[in-house]
Length: 286
Image (cartoon, rainbow, N blue to C red; front, side, top):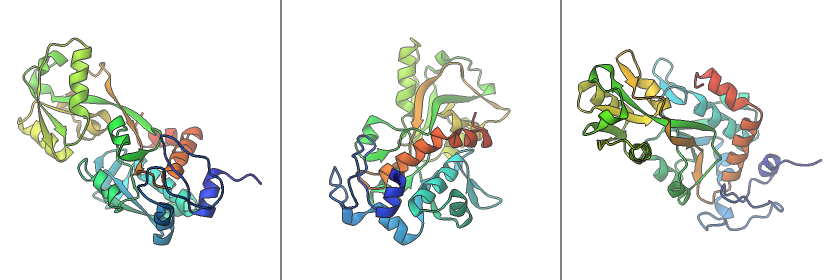
């Protein structure tokens, strides 16, 4: 019987992984990973099996993706469910079993903590609206994109701003370590808009939202999915018809980890069978 790559990994507990260039598997014998970050003796898959749970970094403040429900004290959203799918694949159980048995240990991450927590092996994966960039691919493996979003700029309706040109001289709040600032500057240049805004970086999204509502900044810029968490009747997107700063979200793993291929394969299976589209509908992301 022909064995899928997922089944092979579950049997062997080993693999050679690299999203940027996946090598063909040729038997259960292991070797050094392609970049030397971790050898076969440091198998991520085996560590997950020994632990009995997947350690995942997620967001706690992005509705529909990763959100910590204060009423239930449970994480919920598309990315939370995706973590359970990856845990199921790594541990050889069904998705339903992974959820019922809570086979994922969730840790809230920020743009500053997500990378280091992968590097020091605190986390197996980060699934937290983490945008794939060439720079980040140098340090971590990423799955193929499971969702695509765009940057948005949210302002108070009472601000009097109605166009991107109104950003000239204004102060925009962005997240530390995000790609948002560069995306805005590129958009202004590409659109031929004569505006030079200033930027303040914040450690978390609630702080940016509070700064906007208190008038300490003029705009809150981030992925539109994130901004949706903080949208209300007093706020609006500035010129939403201008789509810019495409954000392709991927699941990050340790560079050269034998977990990387399993994660990428799982994401692609869920794209192919429509599960991720169903999740987007479930969590009102369409």
